[in-house]
Image 1 (cartoon, rainbow, N blue to C red):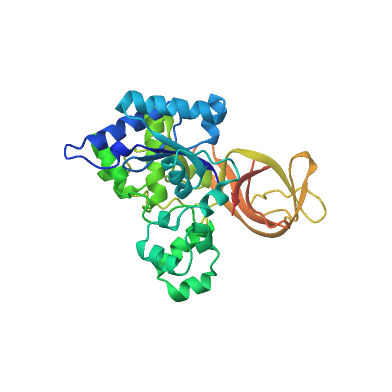
Image 2: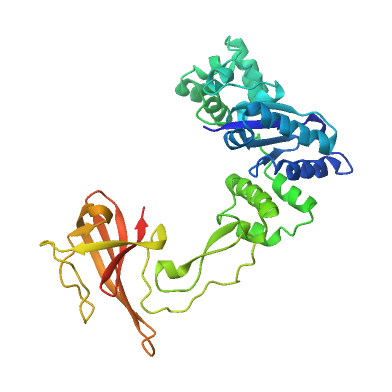
Length: 359
C-alpha cells in the first residue's frame, strides 16, 4: 500500500454561501500540480497525493511537505495540516493529528486510534459496553461474531479496522469532481456520459482528476487514452486519442472482411517481435500459396534462442489487402504455449512476428 500525503485545510471544509471554498480548493489543486501531477481531491478541505514520487524528486518527505505548505499558504493564506500514512483512512487521521507515520507503521497507528474515528456512533456506544475503546480492539473480534451482532455497514467498518479496506465508505465526496470542473467553467456533460474507463466509478473520478491536471500541465496531447477504430487486425484497430476529445456518435460498423474475430489480444505490440514458428521436426512453418501452413506449429522460437512448445494452435486467418495495386498478404494464428501464455503471431513475407498477447 502506497504512502499518501494528506492535506487537511479546515477553513475549506465547509462550503460558504458565496462558493468561495470550492473556488479556493480549485486554486489549491492547480498550485499543487507543480509538486505532484497526481493530486487527488477527496472532499472539501481534504486532498491527497502519493508521497514516493515527490519525495524522490524533492529530496525527502520534509522537503515535499514544506513545498506543499508553502503552496497552500500562498494561494489561500491558510495553514494546512499535513500527515503521511498508508491508505486514505489513516492518511486523513495523520493529517488531522499532524503526524508522519513511518513506513511500515500504519497498522500500529490504525490500531491505537479511538473507535470513534470510524464515524459510527451506535458502534462506539455498543463497543464501549463490551469494553472495546480502540480500533485495534474492535479489529480483534472475529468477523463471524461481528456479523451476528452488527449491521452490514458495521461489517464494512470492521474490515477497515482490520486493514482489509483502506478507506471509509463515506470518506469521499463522489460529486466533488463534477463540482470542481464546473467551477473551472468546463463542459462536463460529454465526458460524464462516456466516462474514463467506460463505466463510472470512484476510480474513474480519480483518474479524471489526475488526467485533467496532467492535460493542464502538458497540453492537449499530453494525456492519451485508448480507443478502437475500424480495421482488420488488432494493431490496425487500436489507436490513441487525446483525453477528452470528442468521440464519434457511433462505432465503425463496416464489415471489414477478414477481420480477426473476438477475443482481441489484451496487448497489441506497436513494434512486433521477430519470432520463428517450427514444426515437430524443427523445420520452419511457412504459409502456402493457398493460405495453408506447410506444417503443424509445434515450437515458438523467441529471441536469443528461447524455445517454447506450442500445445494448441488456431488459424491461420489469411488476409489479403489492396489486391488491385500492391497486394499485402499476411495471416494470423493464435497459439497457446506450454507455459500457459496465449499469443497472436502473424506471418508476412515469409517472416513470423509476435503481434499480441492474451491474458
